[in-house]
Every structure is written in structure tokens, then in C-alpha cells.
Length: 315
Image (cartoon, rainbow, N blue to C red; front, side, top):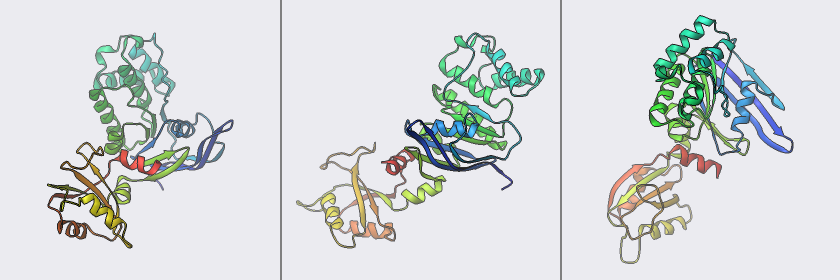
């Protein structure tokens, strides 16, 4: 409990007749990154605004266990376009309690470290969208918050700057900062997150760790490559699996044919099958069942991507 930074318990938020957030709960501790994933309109920004104190929930309890200020990067950006970059950072840092000297020193160090040192005398309006995004993110963390809330922080960033911001987030995590992020960049979520929360129509559809997700979706799925998908002139693996599915007490839960890009393809080619079995039916048993009739080139566990898992949960 001593490491807990934020606890949200059954938060609700509505706008006139629209219920934006329904029964949202979350706990985040020091040095933990939690990512909120959802389609547009799923309630992500509304949740972050409540967590940041921009507005209050209609009901529910929100508790913060930190005496320091939080850092909040809203979805809507708000830099002063006529100010110089260094001047902008110093101004925002002083608003968050830093002295004049602290604001100047930390701003200059941050700009040099994250590739903006040569631009510190330029006006904000002279920067690209991605560079302005970096300035905005740096302004959010200069006061070293214990809780950092980032709404779409990777928007507009090229791959190099994306890596720089991911490095910044990793540094903050190592320092013990609790971080809550919303993003559509699923590959980044997979890389950095300790907790993941899928949102669907204002509700939590699923929440847990990456290991929890693997256990839910990846333990009973296999990918099988065949040299030839026919066992005789009349039967393919697809027809064989369909026969198995139709039997009482079948151990086959579902299957589909895919190509290497994960796209459903027609039969008659060399293909890869993704097969899901019911719990309790082992990979060895599946291999023995199929190898009696088909020449198997490759047989492996299949762990769905985060995007595939999200689509499965929220469909």
C-alpha cells in the first residue's frame, strides 16, 4: 500500500445524456506504467481528465497518495506560438513551482538531451508538429512529478523521436514515477506497459498484465504450417477440422487459415492454420491428431498480438 500513488474506485462521468465513463476503477503504484487502450469515444480522455483533476467524476472515489504535483499532458495541446522554446519551458516550469534558476537549468538540460538544443531560441510556431510535441512533453515532466498522465503522447512523432520519448518514459519509470498513458500505438504499449486496460463504450472490458493477457488468449492457440493441406483427393485440413468441430466433445474450439501477414486466404495454396483448442487438450495431443493425416512442416504456440487481443475482447 505504501507504493500506491493513485486509486480510482467506480468512477462515472456523463455529458448531458451521454454516459462517457461507467464504473471505472484503477490502481497505479510507483514505477508502474498503465496504458489505457480503446477506440475513439471509449472514454479514455474523460478518464484522464478526472484522474488529473481537470473535472470531478459524477460519482466514485479518487484518491491520490502523493504530496507532489502531477504532470498532465492533455490531448489538446497548448503552447504559446510566439514564445521561444526555452522561454516557453522556463515559463511553464515556474508555474509548477520551480525557481527561476531551476527552471532555466532543467529546461536547457532537457532540450539538449532530447534533441532540441539547437532550437531553443526559435519561436514555437517555427517548430514542426513533432518538435512541438516534444516541447509539450518536456514541459510536463520538468518538475519531476510522482504521477504522470499522458494523453496520446506519441502523436505526430517520427520513429527517431518516438524512441527518444520512450527513453524518457523509461527513465521516469526507473526513477519511480507512476505513469498512465493513452495511445493507439499498440507496439509501444506492448513494450513499456506493466498494466493494460481495454476500454469499450465507457467501460473496462478487460484489465491486467501482459502475462494475464497471454494466459487468457495465448495458451491454447497453435500455428501449423503444412507442405500440402490435403490428406487425400477429397479432404483438406479444413474439411477435417470441420468434421472434428461437428463431433460431440470436440477438442477443437476454432480455426482459420492465414498467410504470413495474418490475412485470411483461399485454400489450394501452401497455408498456415491457426487452431484454438479447448483447455486441457495439449499441443502434443493436437500434433499427434493431425500428424496421422498431414505432413506438418512447423508446429508452434501462437501468442496473439495486443491488437488482436483488443479486437477479440471488444468485438
